[in-house]
Length: 299
Image (cartoon, rainbow, N blue to C red; front, side):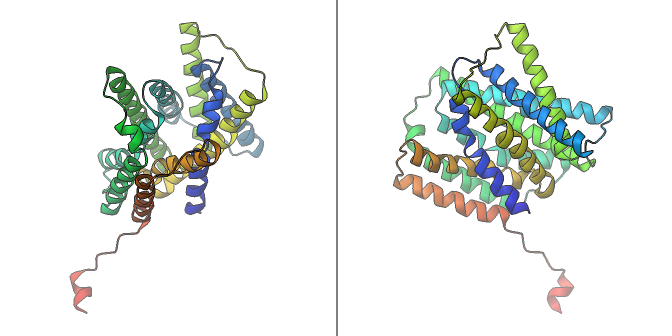
């Protein structure tokens, strides 16, 4: 079950970049994000109410959902969209992939969980592999003021994503399922961004064409309703540090799609990077050997 959820998340989030690219146009970025998560919340609430599976949340649960909506479905998306205007998308992907290590560190700080050596080793190999994959883009970008702003926003977005992971893990420990908490979190995130748009005077435009509507529906159903539910279910089942390795793998999927759709050319460093990511993936999912007591060793 975990492997199926993991592969589903990687495949979905590895292809949503196409839909995100198609969203750019007349509609302002925050407005597109409002549409995405408002529709996602509507679908989730409809399914949960129809099936009778919507869980009741107390004041604490609602407050955590509000914080989760701010982190996962509001601030981090604004950060990544804006960062992509200042730095190459490959560099944004490299920064986002550090979520694996941030989740491991945050799980240690907030939940007192031990950081397994194989998780750290696998995450480090994955980051090194991504560095090789995006080396031409990384090496050709000068460290200007815009670069620093873009890196700062990408890092802030990654930290918000990791914080959202911790909040989801906290909710699941309290017996609340991701479907319910995602529904409330997406609703709160869309509401906060809607308020921002109203205050800033951002017009609520809409493009009535197949490109925009099709990409929006892809981001709503597979990208949000299915993708976030599958990923946050993994956070509860596997722990935040292992689940976050998806963020290392989905740029690799995106590159393969790009090779087919946009003529991306594989290079020797890129192939080496792909191999490192795969090895890191094996390490992250490798179960550590149990340490036998001294008496058992002597027996």
